Length: 289
Image 1 (cartoon, rainbow, N blue to C red):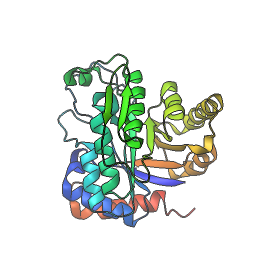
Image 2 (cartoon, rainbow, N blue to C red):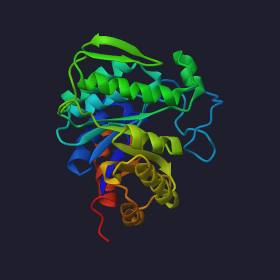
Image 3 (cartoon, rainbow, N blue to C red):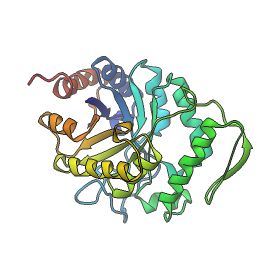
Image 4 (spheres, rainbow, N blue to C red):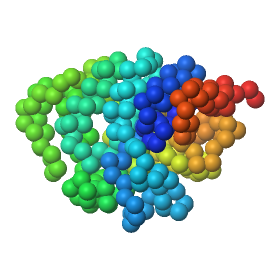
């Protein structure tokens, strides 16, 4: 089972010298992938409930630096050569799909095919309102945007007509590598997210899940595969645990998880980041039973 790292882009992890130290150390010590999440907007007193914590509140302060994930990962790509890169998650319905298709393909080309586009539907009504995007139907909007983006990645010229977006005989280049097939992962812990992962994507990313709940979530994923005539082993299955320890790794692997994502906040001093990453690697990758 692979181990990824979700630690760049927020707070001290938004500083360029910290990103460079973290990315190069993660590559050196065997992490498979760097993940970076997104929020364009945070508010001081949210009404919307955060779905990934027991108290419904996001742990990130509203005034924290939070980088655009595609730009942050482009920076990480420039200082590495092997480690994979993924958004975890980009809130797709908040964006113009033609622009995202262009940006994602650009990052894939610049990283020599190391990029995976992780997408989610979003949870903050306040964020959607600030961006002028309807909060209702965001799931359907996400599904349609993915279909439109795949059209742009594989056809030239490309045409698409849907409820939320349409274009006719346009050319959007470059195409992703190789051959226009950019991997897409759907994030979210709901049954709807699991269904979208099976019907629309190449994998699933479950975030902040109790270790005891992973097997049941993956079982629903497998059921959806059977329902839609898809082989379960075609999907990547990544999870970040809310209560994980290295002792959970064998059980995760037996449940069908292909990547454990370690979530953390790097230290503020760039000259200590490499040591921090090395310790994480000793704990999660190179541990001795």
